[in-house]
Image (tube, rainbow, N blue to C red; front, side, top):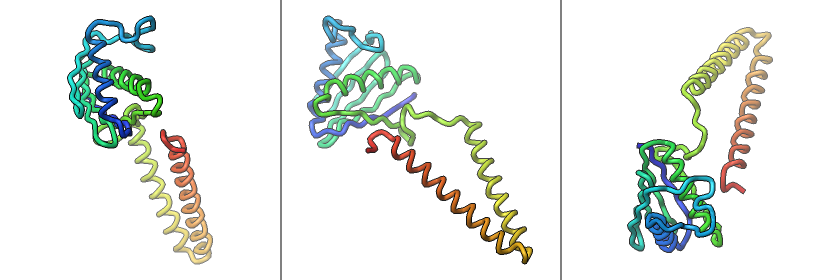
Length: 191
């Protein structure tokens, strides 16, 4: 079953847990959640919604997907399980939209992660891409070893060979540092 976990940093997690569960229960009662407006912008209104909650825990069932909520002193956590990826994405988007709307005064955001690593919604590399990158890394190491061994074994080329290896290492270090810097700047929450 596809699963994702969300975290909303707030010191009023219990308040937002109750508000979100009440909203879900209201949707499940058949009354329009937003009278006079499109019920759920960007998507259809869920057909089967149920909610149960206390001040610290809650469960929302939406069209077969289940969200378990927990309020801690510093965050609201959500764990969503669904039958398929499409349903998981729809429920995740619905929860994100409602939490963002309800917590607009506190500038609430939901950070989603997949259990076992990887951010939900982040592009995944295909098997062929991973194999290609692994092969490229192995070839790069083999070429460096061959060049270094060949050039350093010939006395008149030893100085040039060691300089080329040093330059290659410095260029690679600069490329990796640039990549990490750009990735850090483009990640959500970086500023």
